[in-house]
Amino acid sequence: MNKPTTSLPLTSSSTIHQLPIWEGTFLADSSTCDRSICCCITGNIVLQQVTSTTLAISSTQNGHCNAITIIQTTFVPDSTGFSAMLTLSGTTFIIVLSSNTNSIIFTSTINPICNQNATRAILLSNTSSTSGQSTTSIPITSTTGQSTTSVLMTSTTSQSTTLPLTTATMIQSPPWPGKFAIAGYCLQSQCCCPTGILVVAKTSSTTLSISATLSTTTYFSTACFIYYTGPQTFSMAYPTGYNIVYSIGSISYSFTLSSDGNTIMVTASGNSACDDTATRI
Image 1 (spheres, rainbow, N blue to C red):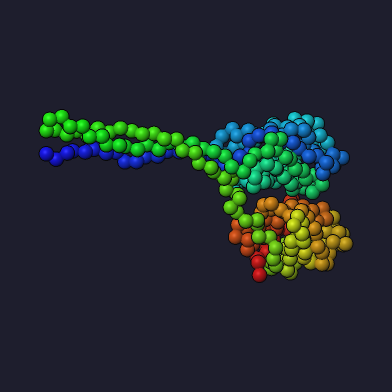
Image 2 (tube, helix red, strand yellow):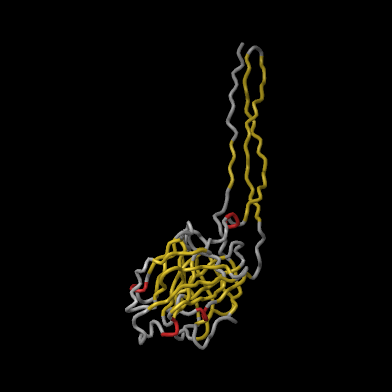
């Protein structure tokens, strides 16, 4: 007699959390923030994930804060998951979570003396464990008389998998250094315009410089004081992300590097006539 045998396929299931991990308590460093000019975050910063895409931030602030001392608001990280725009008391910050998720940099889009950073109160390790289950079907054959029946038994085992804390460790630092040709869209009649070639150089392991020739036809304008014209080099901390904010004259400029590293978008706060683009050469 033929022995009929029934078997089930091997199945497995596991749960992997979406990363990076923003949630937790961070200690704000207000030593770099000038309270006589800025609204500075002080004390503990508490972050909580309230939806799959939204985080809530709670903290305190001091300085020029329009009489508001409590921070309670929400923000949504961008497509990278590690950066977001956050407005506090009228000032917009670009906030960037480090690749190991243990620190946050707050970059003011108005004035660099308002920049701050924060460090996680309890540092996270580089790995975390998840548990899963695998289910295997084992055919057991029993014989009664001349008939044979196959009985299935299920064996379940636990498996432990070590996962990287974030996927950012697989991503190289943004490729800022290089030479970029400026398109020339910026209106010199209204703005202090970078012209010609924009040179971005890594001056040390922690610093970056941006060099260009600044031009304007309106020297009397507060947008570009006369001493800012001509070849200029501006130094800053090496960015962890794809955005740099720097003030030239009375205008705050945002330099945004494209994901492929071949284009820089130059955006001026308060005056779109000063915007421009630069292409790697």
